[in-house]
Image (cartoon, rainbow, N blue to C red; front, side, top):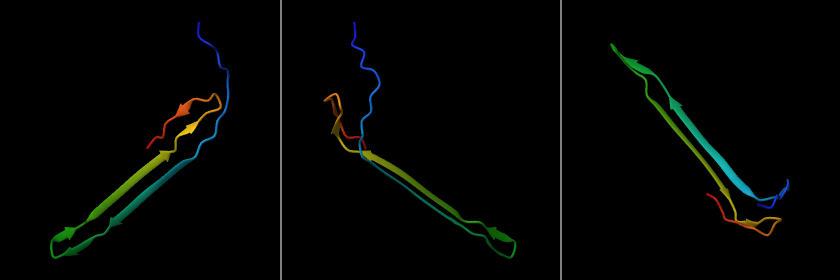
Length: 62
């Protein structure tokens, strides 16, 4: 049979950031209408390795 651990809490440090940019516009000349559009989104999260309260090594995550 497995050993029941019950609830417990640990703390770790995590870094996350999100970068988002948009560029839109509209211009026309004669019968032409141009609507350029650009988007960029980037999300990143990292967590450093640590040892939890049960002395189990938790590897880093990127």
